Length: 450
Image (tube, rainbow, N blue to C red; front, top):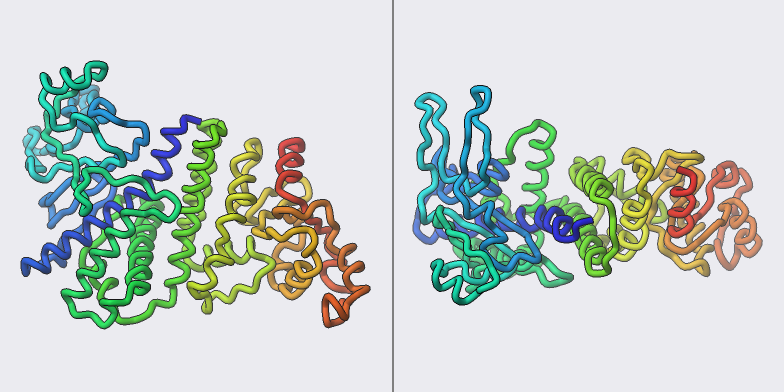
């Protein structure tokens, strides 16, 4: 796996969405402060470039977002700084030189027309770019071992609220873009004298809801093959709503799910763990597809991987997030299996592998000493157990090679201590063939059997 490209691909996907939302919130604040209408302004995602802010067909500003971790000099961004060039092949235009798109092609006249003025072309980066604003002589005298690249399109590095012309990727709990977004949300609420203007937790929920708005738009347009577009009117309606949304917790879980994967990819990189590009792209596609599930399907997915927990869809709260979306369990079990089992197709319908006698991925991460309480949790979850009745193996973090029915016999003998209730011999677990298998054994078994 090309670590830089993997990081740029996935982390860039998350980073780019946050950049777009930050730019939108910042523009709304600018309009509010200057008493300008903004309801008809839109953020277009991945159309001409990564992000456009537009009023009708007029481009207010255009942005490219590059999450290149090892990039240091302008030459690393040559595909942005160069001018686009086309040639005609078989009567059609063919791009032969990448660059920042500042012109649009008029189909009727056959001419190119300026679409983005010089003050509205921005490049967003995650590291400092040395010598970006130097002329050729100054650059070559200062950085003798680096190649000078002219900035023919007069692209500007975007300057963030902290005064820096770069914004690093999220790392653990350090998320600059999240803080920038929340600050803009707070500004809007103060300008509106909103009831929640001093409620930090409410602003965080709004932030997650806005990201969910973008994810939903991407999901819908991904299916329809269109470019995602978000109206500023929809953004301001979410920000200024006085209702505590029912799906706040689910939005946080969705974001935690993809950010857990982001951290897992980062750990792969710093530990020099190699994965083929093809398998990484396939795994990344699985994560995106799961994140693109609608709310009902996503909750069903959560219930399947948390078969040891009681999840009531309409009663999930933010306090439930660390349990339902355990970072450790996702990293140690779920993502580890996906990335290390490279010869079998992951089945999103069963959330596992429909191979041999069936393997279900779970977030069960209890130690072997807690098998009694785990079985109690499983037995109380009849709904989920019936769903996975035909799967032989429940992949978990630490408990290996235990036939569940056999363990019930052992625990039932001390039922007054461990269960406080009778365990019926016709319990569904006695009739199934389910085994607990730890993640390392499952990886070995799946790779061998394939």
